[in-house]
Image 1: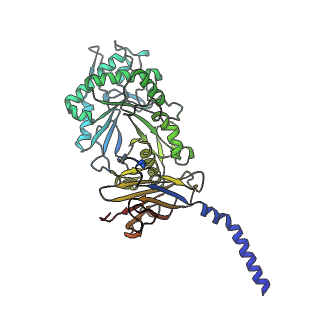
Image 2: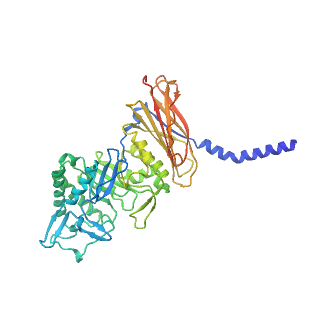
Image 3: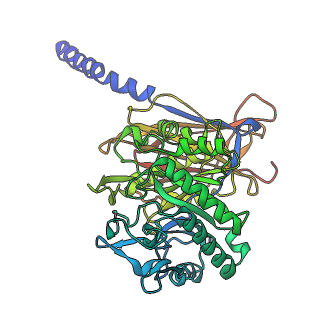
Length: 489
């Protein structure tokens, strides 16, 4: 009998010995996310909603945005012509044309007007008009002649620099004069004008870097001759790309006193690549090299003009498959934290905006909040795991919002993150506050809000105390806490 008890005890010790590393790992894996709402140095900015701009290519038949919230805006891409259809030049879409009979160039803004009217008629605004692909006639010289008597056609249409930059400048003056006369100066000053699209990609711009910089200078000079306060900028690839020209553009602009109001970048991260999903690394390599250099104009803004979290990319590089909804929703929370932390603005999306709409809704509810810097302590479960939170204060509603996420570059990851969330607030210890929470993950999609419950703050200071929670946050999910103060505080 004693021998059997010893045997069972031995087995128990062996099992505990084997499980000890796992128990230890879980204990050590707690991640502490915290901020001090009482410290004014943690205040970064008022939170804007950055997910309401949608790209549309030559929208001749109007536009639809299923998630339009009354503030949705459109970025019109390729509105001037230079479009290819089935590998052939579609001259019918051009706004600058060559008349072979009269041997003259002329403008026709009928289709440009149709695109803009189509957006406004849907009750949407226009955030940006992209002055990209020059009409096919710009491949001709001043005599209307083509080199080799044929047009050069790329994947996206006309990627050739205009043969005559002076003619291009005069044409842009006509474009701007038409827009101001048709829609009014006030409306056009609310719209920004982007010179080029994803410059550095040969299929968008086949010329050299120096040629593009000169092209930009000619373009902004022409635009501002008609509309002196027009908002003008351009769009490059991400900073770590082999064809990244953004850093050089900022330095060139500073050296040559050339103005820009914004610089756009593209960002197409593979959902399972650690170097593309680690936000600190991504910001340092792809955006800080443009925005956080001494030559950057502090009055300008850095925008993300093309974005998608992708599962795979076509061989031609012009189409992709999106990552799953669970990945999209958790990732966009981390992406927006990167935006608020580093004062980036506006994500231009393709499609209808349905890839991460649950996270979008949570973020939209926080619009107008004050964003606070926060700290993270403890190690993630793996090198591919990324856990953090957005902390904000809703001054008007006397409410604090905390939006935490758990993303992993390993699609097969299954481990939840054990979180301790802590915040210092300007109320005495022992104060009762109301709290509720809601979680999104692939299974819950999302769970409803919990009932409001009361918790008591703690601490040793007379006028300041701490609010804290602990939670298990599943991988590929996000969690939102709302903390409401009573009217007496």
